[in-house]
Image (cartoon, rainbow, N blue to C red; front, side, top):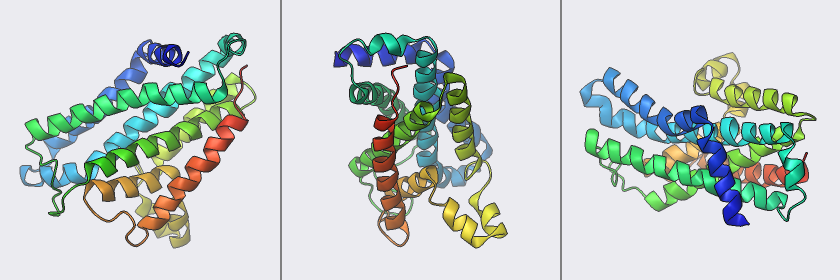
Amino acid sequence: MTLGMIKYHLLVLWREPLNMFFGFALPFIMLFAFATMWDEAYVAMNLEFNFAAWLLIAAMVLCFTDAALSHTYARQTKFLRRLRMTSVTPQNYILTGMISRICVLVVMAAALLAVMAVGYDKNLLEATTGESRNLLLFVALLLWAFIMFYVIAMTFVNIAKNPKRAEGVVYMSFFGMLLVGFWIPLVVFENVSETLGNILSYLPHLSAINVLTNAWRGADIFYGSGINYFIAMIAYTVVFGLLSLKFFKFE
């Protein structure tokens, strides 16, 4: 049953070429586009600062525009009603969805690292700060961030009363997170109000990017405010993990 559900989720992803394109190809597009604009002397430093963000955006795409919207479509076509008649549980559905998309994320991350190492002579074991990387810690935190986004997406898509409203909620949450911190720098909000900037910095995606960037650069993820971002990720994962199960709908 578990393998069958993983196969189902992968098949859904494969049948949505735009999701596959954005989830897998978007980081490479960003890499090649930005690398051509950077001065050669600053390529290594910019790769250092942007790599974690590119992976995080790819994870968000897989969670929101793939997993959540696919779930919306399954609700709309009444597929989940038929699935309810089987032995599949909400826990099994969510877990197999995570596993299938984590496989895609891991392959994409490995390919991106290979391109950086071969095409741009990037040292993957040592950060530009001179600190040694803990790649296992970085991978663990990346998977944790992915799980956090997955349960957030599944909560939003299930809490809505109908599939049409769920689709709107997913798009608003996804593009809202991209808007704050990625497209509009956080400093813009800090200039309006320092308190507002501090509050927004603890949004899920910004907490994750702070933790992941520190881990990738070989810095102490618990240093200074890093511990607060780490705790925020724990809180988001636990709270939305429970909510995703509570509000899961086989309808």
